[in-house]
Amino acid sequence: MTDEQRIRLRRSVITSVVGQALEWYDFFLYGTAAALIFGKLFFPIDGDPLLGTFAAFGAFAAGFIARPMGGVLCGHIGDRYGRKTVLVLTLLCMGMSTVLIGVLPTYQQIGISAPIMLVALRFVQGLAGGGEWSGSILIIVENAPPTRRGLLAAWSPTGATIGFVLSSAAFWLAQQLPQEEFMSWGWRVPFLASVLIIALGIYVRRQNLESAEFTSLKENGRSARMPILDVLQQQPKEILMVVGLRMAEGGASYIFFAFSLAYGKYIGIPDGIMLQGVIISMALVTITALFYGHLSDRIGRRTVYLMGTVGLLLVAFPFFWLIETKQPLLVLLAYVLADSVVLAALVGVQPSYMAELFKTEVRYSGMGIGREISSVIGGGIAPMISVALLAKYHTATPVAIYIMLLAAITLVALWFTPETLARERRDG
Image (cartoon, rainbow, N blue to C red; front, side, top):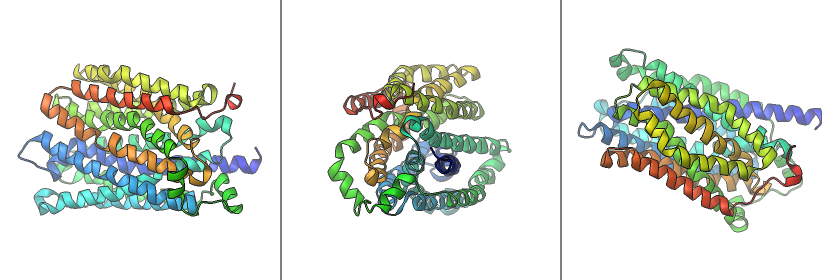
């Protein structure tokens, strides 16, 4: 690589990580609030906390319903006009929606209008989220050499985990206020703080350069005029592969980070213990995801992804068994096994694996459509389904079975998905 290429690649990694951290701070913040307080503030249904939490997760799902639309829209713009343009827009939309959630009146103040506005803002967040993941990854993948693409692309999801840690930490700090103050105004502070960090994120992303592969594509006049139609006609199988590959990670992620908080509250574990477990395990993901990305450069994407999927099958029941002990160290162990060890393998390999399935001219659209469809059917409704199962059976057993079913779907998808890293390109 030339010095110019190294500088471009380094700048792409930094801006992707920073932008992802700030963007997903906003997105994850809602999930934490939905699990712990939004049921009371916006969805007080017949005094039943589980029903209120279920409704709050319904609004959470609304953001995921919007994600395929965001994937289509952002994919078209990204494949036609560039990755950089989309990334600035997604960050701005996500940030402004989060700030507005922080100033929303509650149900007690304005009635049914409160949850309606909350759902609308979640929808806008979903549109932005539908284009964010693919773009932030492509800005790295399309500048990286194939033999290091797994490691370098894994930096992008580590930015998302940093955002998660920041949002959980901000919420945990706000909870240190007296309960009455926290419920009246303290919960708003993490949402309002987004206005500062979004301004920083937009500044950073505006300094970024367009990806080398896309720039070359444009210079040679090879960019697609209708990328959505082109990818649906030329690579429909690859889109289905991405949908299946994401099912296990998407569903399990939101069960482990969002539903588990509600479950801990249901069985009487203090919120602080659960949040600390989530924060520590997700902080470790920033390290282990990079390890798995590097490992995929050595032994192949498919092999590492298979390891993570099988690991998810094995950890589904032990995760809840450990939480049910109510012992802080064992609760932490549950999160470390589920997040830092198992899910990190899927999160770390997804960027390079999915990107390599598509041609450059339709890559943004293909990744966006496939991943975000899966976000709805695999991720967005997972907390709702889990709460419904808990309300009916009063045990986490059916939720563990649900996780295993998601992993089984991904195993089937892996059977049909080829290895994308040629043997001669593998490191070592």
